[in-house]
Structures are given as C-alpha cells and as structure tokens.
Image (cartoon, rainbow, N blue to C red; front, side, top):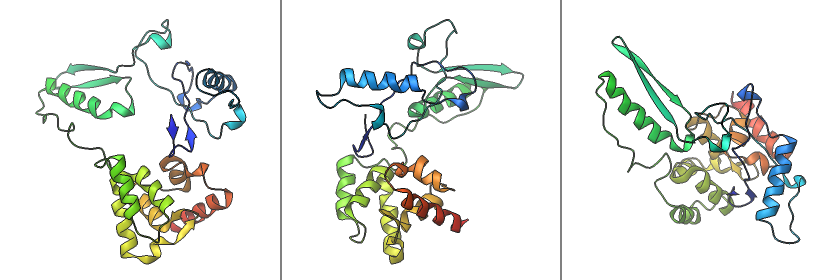
Length: 236
C-alpha cells in the first residue's frame, strides 16, 4: 500500500500467530524474509527486486481473534463479537476482537446493546458525520495546499493536508495570527505544526510527533530529529 504520499510502501500480514506478552510483538527475521519474498513474487518488475536492505521501518501488533486455539489464524473470523451479561440491576458487556478502522460501528453496536440493560440510548448518528479532519476529499485538500500561506513551502502544506485533513485550516490560522509560527524548527517543520500537535493532538514528546503522529522520523535526518526533540524538551 502506498504510504506517506507514496514515498514508501507498507507491506504486511496478519496471519502469523503470537504467543506471550502482546507488548513483545516484533517483526522477526523470518517475517521480513517472508514478506520480501511475497512482494517480489507478486509485485516487482524484472530488475527491480526488493531486498531487506530496502526496509526502513518495521512495526508489529497483536490482533485479538475470537476463535479456538486449534484453528488456523487465517480461518478465524475477523468479525468482532459482543456479549452482554446482566447481573442484578446492572451487568457488563464484553467485546472480543475488533479493530480501529471499525471503531465507530463497534461503539454503536455497544450502545445499542446497553439498551438490554434498560438504559435509554440515542440512535445511530455517525453515518453522515465525518471523522475528525475528514470533511474534505483528497482533491479539495490538495487545492487547499495550493492556496495556503506562501511563507510555508508547498511540500509542507501538501504534507499537512494529507496528515491533518481539514484541520489544515487551523494551522493556516496560526500562521495568520503569528508570523513567527512559520519559523521552521526542523526542515519542513514550522513551529505552528508543533504547537498544533501539542495543544490539539496531545503530543507530549518528540516521539509522539515524529513516530506516532506523522512518521517524520523516516524523513528527517538526525539533526532534524534532534531539533524537534530540543523543542519539546524546552516546552516541558
């Protein structure tokens, strides 16, 4: 899957079982070799073979599947399961499985199930309400990038649109209210953006911003990453 404005590709699998602490999950050497081999078999062109040297970043997580231990992971349903248990005047609901991309649907199912406990819940409402920052399509966002403040490089404005969606307007507003907010803390990283991720997206450390919000850790050199770290350290 193209990633970070097609600068990189994301290649992954979900069929490798994991035992033990979920926090210890990592991409093993065997998994790297398997993914590279699969990619080369189905996607590369002659003379453009991918090797493990092309890997710049790996991450792993454990996805909970609701099934028996004797079943093959690839055969276990990816659908989540909700179970309600009433007890006295209350009870509890248990969710098995699930994933972030369907969190809204799961939340609505959970609220609906709360009705079984006699709670008065409102009906579904999220179908026509965009996710945070998601009210504009890609073409509209890129048009906003073209029209943004000239003191911010176009490449940065474009990255903003693909990272923050329609909240790019908030970033532009910061520039309009404070000319100093356009000052770059690191190449392509104006102060306005760092202020935004701290005050709006609850980033508390450089890693929150570089790894968990933007993945700029892959694009900035060591000097740039250190500059961002220094900025966060001075703010706390």
